[in-house]
Length: 113
Length: 118
Image (cartoon, rainbow over all chains, first blue to last red; front, side, top):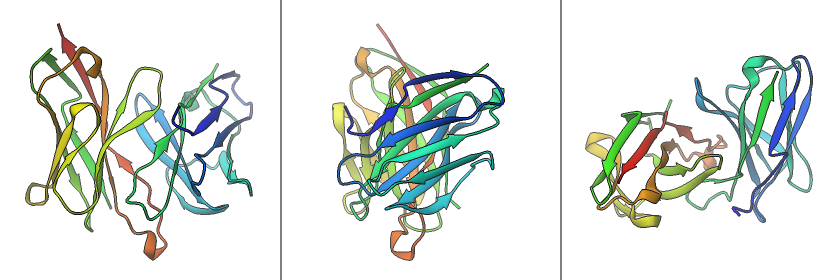
C-alpha cells in the first residue's frame, strides 16, 4: 500500500457520459498530480494541484477538469467521454522540498464503450 | 522543455545476467532524475532517484543508476537479473523549480518492458 488511494479501481461507462475519479494523497502530502497512461500516448501529465490551488496543466482536454478539496483529496472529472479516453488514470502525491519524486496510487482503469 | 528517451522498448535478459536499461534526458536546468517500475495492473513504484550529490545512486531491489551529465544519461543497472524483475521500467525527469513557482511535474519516458528468461 503506497498510501495514495484511488477509487474506483475499475470503471466502465458509455460514450458521452461523465465520470469522477477520486484520489486521497499520502498523509502529509500537499501536492496531487494526475496522469493518464494509454498504450499509444504513454504516461501523460494532466494537472497538478498544490494545497488546493492549481499549479500546472499538461495535456488535459477541455472536457476534463479537476479540483483539490480542503482535506487535500482530489477529484478528476471526465465528461463527454469518448472511446479514446479509455486509459489508466493515476494519481500521485508528493511532499514538496524533499528532493522530488512521487508516490503513485494504483490507478483507475477507465473503459469507455 | 524537458524530455526523456528510453532506448529499447523491450529488453530481454537471462536470469542471473546483467540488466542495463538506457535513459537519456534533456533538461535546461540541472535535473532531478528517477526510475520507476510498474508491475502488471499496478501503479508506479519508485526504484531510485538522483537529486544532487553522489552521481551513483542505489535503489531498491539491487538496482542502481549513474547520473552522467556529460552524456545526459541515467542508465539503470542490476548485476544479476531475477525473475521477479520482469516489469515495465520508466525513466523520468523533473526540473525542480518549485522555488520559482513552477510545477514539479515529472516527464516520463515511453518505458522499457523487461523480460527475464529462465
